Amino acid sequence: MSNSLLGRRVVLTGVSRGIGLEVAKLFLSEGAHLIGVAKDPARLAVAEKQLAPLGSFSAVLGDVTADATMDAVCAQVTSRFGALDLLIHNAAIMAAHDEEILAEEAGKLEASLAINVLAPFRLTRALVPLLKKGSSPRVVNVSSGAGSFDGLKEPGIASYRLSKWALNGLTQLEAKEFEGQISFLAFDPGWVKTDLGGSKAPGVPADSARGLLKTVLLPETVSGQFFKDGQPIAW
Image (cartoon, rainbow, N blue to C red):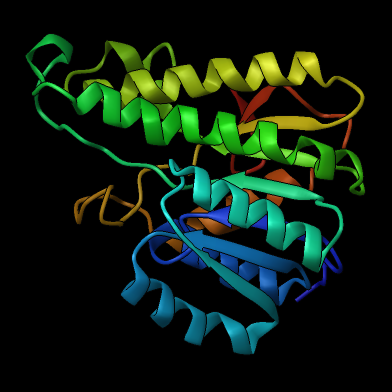
């Protein structure tokens, strides 16, 4: 590997499976110091056994929507690093599938917004002081082409689409607020074979991990844009 992330201090949510696990493997191999967050204790334990031998890794067990998890992440970043260079919001859910937005079961949209939008918003806000102390700090919101303007015209997965569309809007607002201080990017990992993406997806999580690496390595002046595989795409 190229050690392209040598010494970079990273927080990654949704680390225990799928895209998050492949990202963690790749980033550790590139020299990053990584704190991974996941809510399933059994899956996180398995992931930790895979990741710890690869480099500088530690885990936080907890639901990203919980205050206790946010506090634990902030405490570990403070004690372990003293600053933060890269925050990746990868944890997400797809709570409903074939239904359109008003036909979804009650609570599905609320759950989607809580995990896919409000959790990244709250954790970013909590970590901003540590990001400001970091080197070329960057926040990446893992979004989806399903949340693009064109994606909103497609059928199904309505609450997921809406939550990712909102996350894209959040990315733009954050980029404007912290212009010249912290870079904020949205990232489309593509349709890949995960628990969320399903078995019919054409790609694999390792593809997304490589695309995310290209994105985080963009010049620090790049902010407020949407990327896939290191290339800008339309909102």
